[in-house]
Length: 330
Image (tube, rainbow, N blue to C red; front, side):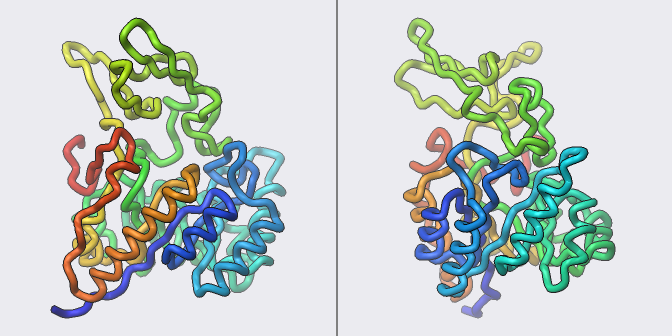
């Protein structure tokens, strides 16, 4: 069987320990962010101080892995210096790329010689024309595609651009315009794109009500399950609602994305990199998922069949979906 082009495996790290675990488990590249509102996973106890980022990049480079620094929120008016400093520090520490979404920040970063620019999924660039504008205007070298595209749509985009594409293959599944969730902002007062917090745990509540366990986000009841049944994390896009005569999950079920079986099709569609979601997750999660997907990437590159996924226990509700890759909800 003919060998295939090897895909880059891009893995999450919410802490320095997770970065080391991802590298040791076989990640080709790590994405992570500073411990402030410049990145879209701005939660207590996560992310990197400046010293930790410098040390993490050096560790990864010693093990032939890359570090991509996510500076992917949108700067607040009057506070642009916080974001520009993050770009400068990532560049100074030797980051292999910065992941950006804001136009002004992209323009600023484009003026830093030698700094590679990746377009964040938060920019929601989902067609070839939009991607080409970012490439021509700012020199963007890679775009992280939103999780709303089929494999056929990704292939069509790749035929018309001269930019690398990166797609999500495992973890949380966002079915909104990435990071722009007005539902989460309405329920919690925290914006995914401005504050870096989608459905923050500080606004989540689980409460027993009779024989049921009710989960709430910002005071809104999102799920009601049996007291002994698995309770999914309460995000509004995966909530259960009554709409007319229908009661159930309107946008998407509370399940996780697992596209391991689609790696050959994604490679054929021209994808360069596969991205795992999960910067809030534990080191054990990081190690298990990275090992599984590194084995899958290596098998595909060698022309071997990809083994069935063994990660269901690490998924939301212990169930998985191919999401928009096999789109049924649009």
